[in-house]
Length: 322
Image 1 (tube, rainbow, N blue to C red):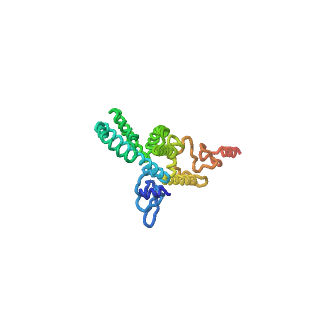
Image 2 (tube, rainbow, N blue to C red):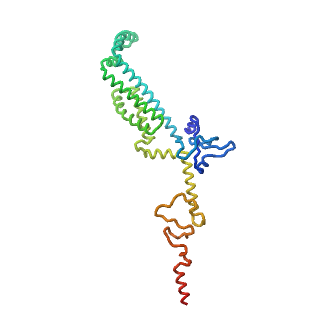
Image 3 (tube, helix red, strand yellow):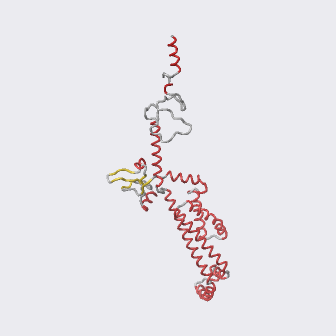
């Protein structure tokens, strides 16, 4: 599957016209229908004006290829985090309401309990052995302070899950670190729960959290794994269409400069130098012979055969003596 084309099919093409003329020429082609600009995501040339224009530094960051697939996976985890936040948010609200009207709820529960007990007994189920009934009865024994702490804890966990979901959905670096750290902190408790009793819900929750941690560490190269942030950003640049064109243009200019600076091409040496001289280096004169070394400060009239050469002075003195 071509994830780049899929992304353009969903979100549309991303065309960009750089201000730099040489790079601008490489990002468009002329067709009978008009100028077509290259999409930064899928690489297709799209007829029409560019969506964005400006200097290279203003080019939009565009994810393509496997990076788009990675965003889709992170958003799956983000949705799962939102569902958790909803569950714990409802639980926090229920505990808070229960705390404020516990006496009336307990009276209603005790008055209706015999009817529920007889109803479930008819279908062959004894609710007196139900763990849910035991939890409800235990909740009635909790004091106001404990119920407040439980409600605050559930609300805090829901808020943490919302932050995780936002960071993962936006595929931000901070969100990936936050999700990895928070999820890793909860793994030991989940392992302890599994040692106490194995249930399908606990196994699924543990597998999802472990998969998220491993995925973030390995693919996003968190905490220096597989080269860390530098290697991750280098991989992103290697997949960038605009960066590839910049590198190709730089290589072409460097090759032209190298060819123009070869000996035996009068008038071309130094014509396309792209940078200033390095400190401590002296550039040879254009008409300097090939065997002259950098730093040779002899003037032009001191070359062999010139009027100022020492051998010429000796020859002149000899002729005068004769």
